[in-house]
Amino acid sequence: MTNRTVLISGAGIAGPALAYWLSRQGYAVTVVERSAEPRTGGQAVDFKGATHRTVLERMGILDEVYRRQTGGHDQTIIDATERTLAVMPGEFTGGDVEIRRGDLSEILYERTAQDCEYVFGDSITSLSETADGVDVTFERGAPRRFDLVFGADGIHSTVRRLAFGPESDYVKHLGYYYALVETGEQDDFRGVGGTSLMYNEPGRLAATGGPKASAFFVFASPEIAYDRYDSAQQKEILAGAFDGGGWRLPELMEAVKRSDDVYLDSISRVTMDHYSTGRVALIGDSAYGNTLGGFGTGLAVVAAYVIAGELAAANGNHEVAFRRYDEKLHGYAKITRGANAGPFLAPPTKLRISLRNQMFRRAFMLRAMLWMTDKFATDITLEDYPQLARRN
Image 1: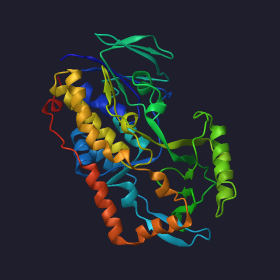
Image 2: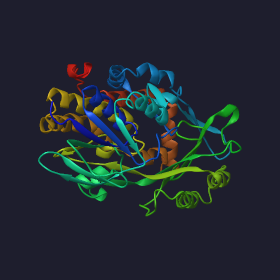
Image 3: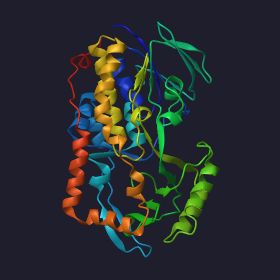
Image 4: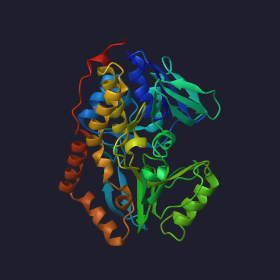
């Protein structure tokens, strides 16, 4: 087998999933992650359809994912007086099985930490490819050389920027932002009996008690220049976006100010013609991310299986393996190239809000939407890759 040493940027979901498959084949895998430690908690993610379940089963983690599942959450859509307008069922937002992102990350980390090198609190600063490998420099660590480099570092991927070009060439802002906020125990904005609530005004959504965070927000906005690591700045942007709102929005904004856990980012789409160049390949949101699109985690886990399988089938020949990976994933990731969750979650007019709510009051429309999501989630021929079933 050629190409023995591998660097993966990103220890979220895609990175450890790829590390799992590559380490089983005898690769020396290093995973570098900007965060100081494995991330816990976080929003809920989900898996849909037989393809996702098959990959989880082949990884040996399906039972553990089911054991830690959230159970799904219905969201009661309300007006400003908390009158029920519709219910968004958990099966729509949570797929076949829903799990906290941090719990899934922990499962994958536990199964790879012994066989892989994890470097936390560091990130890549440069990539220089030669005929024999990729020379990599880091913010903190000493320079190193690897045979292959994988970017599994999200929509704002450093690897993509260094290997393919600036973010603006590949990432399109879709006109909305979202925020996840963990409020304190004293700030309970759920409905009677702990019901998860969802409130809309044109171009704005506030949800409480749901699977993503104790408070979740979406709002329409042109692109904003801000520091994604500055919590105070993010709070200020969020407060401004919901200024003058009805229901309990003023109280929610006060809770946001008190929170120590606020994350705000754009709803954006990554569009690329190919996901590899030379000895560098992208996987997960860095290659085909679409914020809140509902397929990101499943895509990442399937993609990790496919690219590892193609490397095994090609005996480590990255040129052959990456070409086949590009071909397979370009078709499977097509759902991410047209979707925009922003207008669905925060419709721009009262009429559009009403029409959206009607979808959840009509059983046949809900069944059609569920059928479509399952169709997209299974739209790939999943090969067996017998080489992945054994350890070299």
